[in-house]
Image (cartoon, rainbow over all chains, first blue to last red; front, side, top):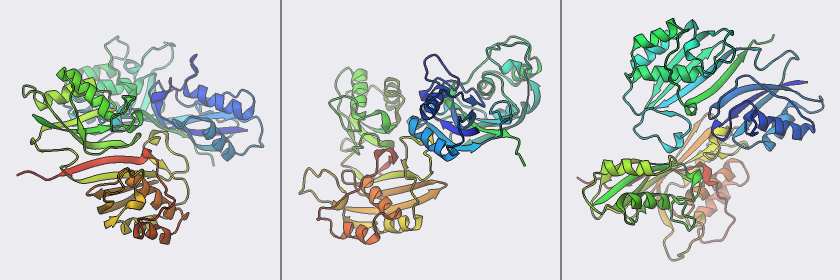
Length: 249
Length: 249
């Protein structure tokens, strides 16, 4: 029986989503908890491989339960009992046998939080990028709007291991919101390249703080193949908000 | 020159405000940072002695700078450079020579956050009290309103070291707000007894979850002298929000 998990985590304590030799990835913690419940190894598949320090409000993963005797709600309770409070299973639901957390996803939504206070509030440490320089919000929103649509985002991808793979993605929407000294950028797309949200945010902040101009930013989109200096925002402010799948009738 | 500091901290990493033999109290961290700037020991005085795990959004403290040569803004920057990011100086201002962070305070405001979700979101871990039992919000608000005014709060004070000291305090206002699955209780008073906010909250939640009745709660206020079972909410959800002083003309 395939089960779909909705997972939230505080990324600060972990080495990212994907299994690591140090055993401290979210995947490692989940697989250890699953194995201790099932008494046998269970592989888990996540929708997005978040980096170390990146948070999740609604990461999705699936695994195959070895027997149908245990109810999804029992899996949820047993997993939460075995996991540290920095990782929580928010929901556990039965899924179709061909459901795949990663390959069935049709849209992902990431949020990036920026704090523009002169001093970063201690309760925001590790949860927002501290940008104390003056920032042109209208310019930020304008530059962000240029990203919407289907583009080759090669300029905003790090460590490309498979250079033949397409770097074309469709950014459905970039929402830019300001509330007090905080700015939230919300990116929804059919998929994201490695470190894409952090590189988009790093470049947007370059423009908004006047360190680079809009022409430079437009060039990154227009000439995706050229090597160029890149700016990557820290993982602290990044949240995997939601993963969208086709709704079954 | 006397300086007044506005300080915020994430209480999870520290052993409370007041200096401890382990050197991990907020006061210890601040005094070490001050000493390394001034090259001599400096004593700091805080407005409220928050417990281990309790947070502050606007703790106030004062100290006497050894010379007038260093500007308040330079103290702020030097302190923040020397402190861990879990403690931040938000403001540093000159104060009158007779100003005392603790004894000049005329009002303090504490907030207590309760999370009623079935699963505590990991980014709320250590920052809210997780109460997954069904909770009667109207009853909570009603019981809270009974606390307003001048009462003997002896039933809501822990470890009274000086039994002769008055346990009468004036609670100006208890604000009870609900937002989604979160409840915030905001207490403003001329002063608080040791653990008073946590004991008030613990007792209010007893009533709101139906574990104790309103008669029991009223008795705590009416018969302050009698020994009784007490309920103390965990430090996680408690925030020292603000300290009020007379405004000088």
